[in-house]
Length: 424
Image (cartoon, rainbow, N blue to C red; front, side, top):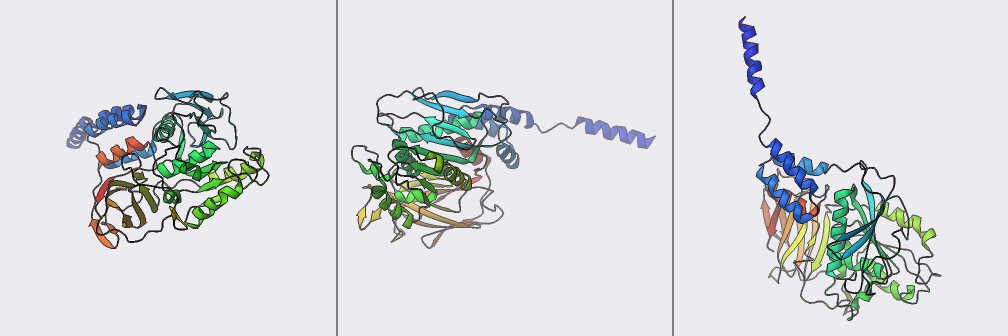
């Protein structure tokens, strides 16, 4: 009898146990977060997640799993618009399966200096390859590929597509033809983080030196972060092989990974595509993005718009007594400057375990974003800058930091638990 009473009492106690009070608010907050239409809306929804006071590991696991995608989103050719004036074509396979992560290719068109901002053609893929999602933005004379407006536009279009379709964040390639090829070089030097590789076709990086384009400061060193697949024609009246190849040799000798497929008999066209297509698509497949690369180099004169490369953020420019005396510089060729830039700052990083070794010039402050997938948070993180230890301590995981960067990046594979400010 006593045993029976005891069992009933235990059952009664167990019956009163409730799930954690944060579960329902957290579910609702994450539902709003996943429904956000852009990074700004996601940041607002992230505040609701923080109010639920969740455990770090719970939030991290949810962000890694990502959103649940609609089963039957639009497929085929879709005309989109961002920000009122930026149109784009989206081409989604008819066989799209939301359970699968898809490679995506951004294709920048040529003739970008025309005044008409409307989209060309019917949205069909001009250079079709493997099954993937194709994104074709519109550029024009007031918004050419070599403008900060288009760098932001392309990034935000990719973000928008990722909110509807299951895009593999580490297989987003950026390509372009003619002006689009030159634009691919430009974006690679300004915004490397979202992209796995860059594939300039019939373009020429040194076009960006033209004073008429007014592109601002550019740094060839930044091309060392991602591989390039380059095609140019021998009979191209604009950018023939003989004109383009010296710049490719210079970049390759300075550490830029380039696969070059010259077409000696081709003009300024893409008649070579059928025989190059397989190499092109193999290159993309063989070069997925490392979201947390162990080596990074980044140079900028604009910390507001162009200060970040993956887990490195350059915050403040300025010389310091500890500046590196010499850093190999791709912007110098045969004693001359390739691009005539103003004051800049540069950071080169190498990570080995929990130790980051940095070489810096012209940088007073930079931030390192630390991911649990890259650093062991049970041990000290050590940062050595120009031979001097600038940081050596334990770092705590922060849900606020995690949500801040997750809202910006919309990336299941690049999540940051902490940030540390370094002063060389």
